[in-house]
Length: 461
Image 1 (cartoon, rainbow, N blue to C red):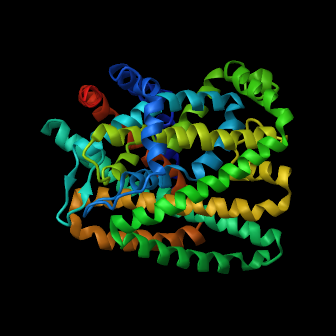
Image 2 (cartoon, helix red, strand yellow):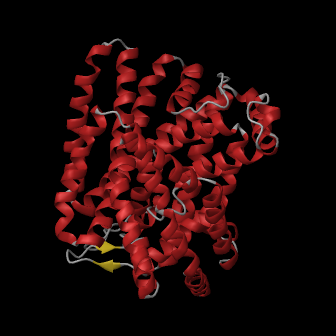
Image 3 (cartoon, rainbow, N blue to C red):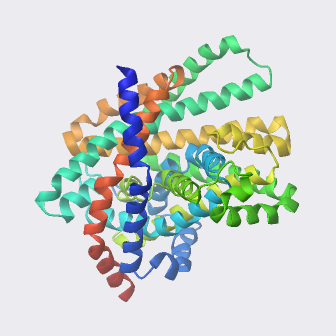
């Protein structure tokens, strides 16, 4: 039975993350870019000033049932800046060659506008729930922005989101944390291989308790935790990545040559192992979308909680979010792998171990403790972000009374993630994650005129 489920899932997954889906995501991004006159380029400087500039300003206390705009973007980044930035980029380079990084950048260029549109619509069409909290996201802008004939898409999105969070948002992230901690403890001979199961169980219980404590505290507590955790983990990772580049500065020109030349002629860079231009493009685009979630609509759920009266102003955070996630973090990961001079088995899938090898090849084995801390922060922040997404999806279907039972169940999944084999769970979650894009992309296309109108009105003022 499991074999049949796995086979069906593989077929669906190949379509969801295949060429037709990539064309739809790129196509909608292009439509939105044209209708907003390429706001991600035209107003890029303004977007950075309105986002990074506000980070250093004193943040006013958010109103009841909301979080500050900075806390909203940190919560969204908490979910997007995760293991996809470390394992996803490594996999894209291994299967698609260095040229995949170029296509990751190209997808991010359109993704900035897609995320801008998602956030703008989420704030514009949001509601307040019986607890007085702002709620929004794809299911709400489908419900409130489109006719009743499209309402089934809102429920489809919420159902897929509720399923996805347990795997993509929790179990697989906890598994990454245990793997990172086990690796560091084994490297320093603090435990032996026979003790890992016990250690993992303890880690799972601790994570479950901490996640429950944060999520049950509501949106205010989630925002408070993420606004402290996200900047710390980002700065730590950036310092480590920049250090690798500086210590291997002589390799940088050749690395950029391999990225640009390999994007159109991958076989010349990989020794013929990867000969397909379309494979390089597909891996770069799909991994970029998997990392920054532009087109999936999930990040807009967090932004809808922001204490703001300007949908477009919050939408600018969406542009910054994709820029920070893909152009900065993913690029640092790629340069860490390619500059370090480690051997890459092109054509063979790879994960976080390839990125960690890039760090250890430059700094030595002692850096494994820092990479473990970075991985743990990335994964834990993703758990919190997706916990909020799942709560909003479940609330949309069943109402706010289901929230506490859901959050307790979601927290306990951490123990499963720490102790079980997650091969099939990961694959099914990956498929559901991709399927979420379908109702969202339809809504974005149909509401592209609304995005253009809101954008024009905002900048006219």
